Image (cartoon, rainbow, N blue to C red; front, side):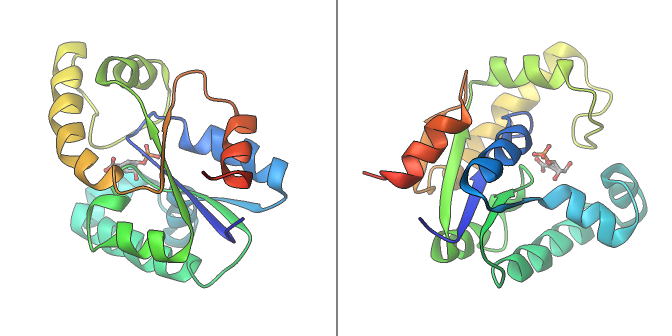
Length: 170
Ligand code: S3P
């Protein structure tokens, strides 16, 4: 099994929940990139977007991912936008195993509505606006997400299934 496992996918696809469960099963450390950025900056993600802007957030995302690629035995839950800039998908593919948790725009919308997490890109959107936003952004982002080593259906996904995939990759 690779020494770094990257879970990638859109906001609300379950990367953090599944990542923490998977890390326990394989006895790796779990890293939530967003939390690490928040801890390092001593600010929440919405505060970072407000005070520094998205571009700075993307730069920090890049720096933290490079740093994580020097560490071992990690399951990393990446932010939804991380694979889509600065050739970070290439970086992750050369430093570990990438797994795309794929869900439909409708399923993502439902999960994001239920989730209490504050996400600057979708704040203040109505349900209809949210669905349109997800559809159009997901279409662009899937060009990157689909470069993952594994693509799995994120509905009813269990950490056991991910563990099996890592142990028996083909
Ligand atoms: C973002 C996703 C968020 C967080 C930031 C930007 C994105 O992470 O990194 O709000 O661009 O899709 P999650 O995918 O963990 O929600």
